[in-house]
Length: 307
Image (cartoon, rainbow, N blue to C red; front, side, top):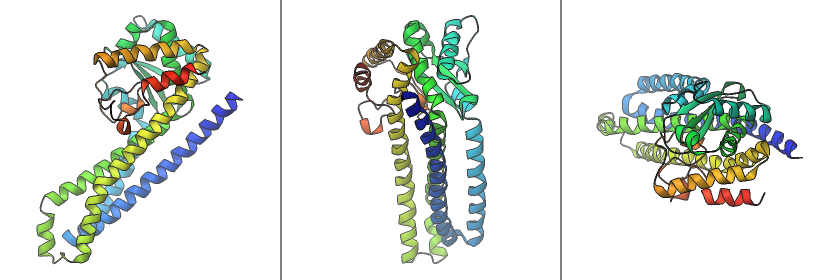
């Protein structure tokens, strides 16, 4: 029964991935339409068409490059290095064991230079995935705890969560880029040009208001969607780790060690774009649940203790 539910979740994640692709294009198309109408009034139809062509080519290129290079981008962003066959033998063995247990190809293994306990998985699918573990996790976790953390990440890989998180990150990035481009263009003399072109009528004012509001609200909305989806999948990955290791105390113990690190102030310093990928929330907004990338550690522990 559990395996049936997992396969159903994988299929749902695949469907959600394509829905998100549609959403990103719909959001970007709407933003491009509004911004193009404004640029047409400010700078002329020729500039509007140039903007549309540039934004279309840039968006497609950005999506394809980020999607296919997502794993490389993620490990590069945290300055991770490939795991050493001798120095990190236990880590490599644990990753191989969890890959076999999860029925997925063994991902590439990386080590991130950070003293705290954390890890993440990235890639567009199980065949092109990576697992990255901090030096602190290798030093501070015993084998059972490390297996649980790797099992958590292997569940993300098996359930295609890594593809979903990649697509969401692309959506957030593109919407933010579009918003910043528009706001900066307005900052550098847009109003003066509208006056010279006689574009200060009621329609122009409405378009400008819509454009500014869209630039402010759209990135916030897609960011909240990103965080909400990330939090939901952490509970499932915790349960998946227990299924793979068949040892709930291992995951509970690892989370308690991370909780103690939180209290001491130790945390991973990473770019916000990759924060949702991590095993534990690496951001500074732990007191602000709305903007947290993960559910509270205590809630995750309680859920596991009920299993």
